[in-house]
Length: 326
Image (cartoon, rainbow, N blue to C red):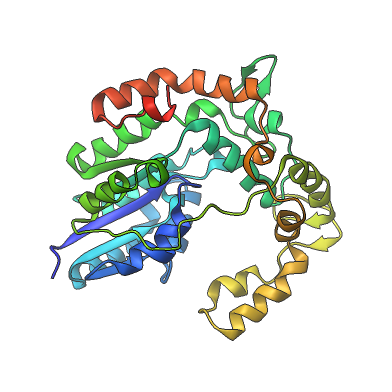
C-alpha cells in the first residue's frame, strides 16, 4: 500500500490535463481521485466565486473527513484551482487558502507552459467558450505594448499575471518548498522520461506513460478563429445577451451523466448547439496554420516574462532556457 499522501494538481490550463486525468492518473495504485468523479470541482468553484473562504467551513471539514477516511493517495485534480484566466487569476489566492485549509501538508503539482503558447491556447479556449474578442483585445495589446486587465469588461487578461514565479512562491509559502512540484509541459514530448519522473516524485509512486494517448487537442486554425468570432454572436451565451441559438443546452446534463449510451446520446444532441466542434472539423489548425498570434506579439509576450522565467529556472533547475522560456 502506498504511503498516505495528498496531492493538489492545480493547473495551468492547456498543459495536458485531460490526458493526465483520463489516462495517467487512473492507473496509479491505491489512489482516490477527486475532481472528476465527485463534487470537489463544484465546491472549489463556489469558493472562488465567494468573497472569502469563511462561509465554506463545512466544505473544508467535509474534505478533511474524506482524506482522513481514505488510505494511500488522495489526488485532487482540477486546473481551475490555479484561478480563472477570464478573471485574470484574481481568485488564485483565495483558492490557495482553501486548499491549505483542507490539507496543509499536501503536495502541489503545477504544470507550466511557455507563456506565448499558453496564452494562444487560452485565447482559443476563450473563442471556443463563445466569446468574440480579437487577439489584441484579449491580450490588451495596443501600440506595441500590453495594458492592464479590464474588469469588468469583455474576455481579456493582463499577460503579466502569468508570472510563474509568483504562483510558485505563493504555493511554497502555503505548503513548503519541498512540497511544490513544477513541471514544464514541454517535457511531455521533449523529455518524457523527465516528465514522468517529476510526476512520480510528486505523487510518491511510479507514474508510467500510457501508450497511444497524450496527443494534442484538435485546434482551430487562424481562419477558423476569425469565423468563430462571427458565428459566436449567433448564440445565446451566459456572458452575453442576445443571440438566436441556445448554446450547449445539454451541457449540464452531460456533466452529470456517467459514461454510457445515455451520455453519448446527449453529446450528439448537443453538437448542433456548439460551433466549436464543427469549426474544428472544417478548419482545423495544424502546424503553422494553428498559430493565431502575430510574431511580434509572441516575441513581446516572452520578453515580458523572460527575466522571471530565468529567476525561476536558476532556483529550480528546470532547463527552461533550452525550452525557449528566456
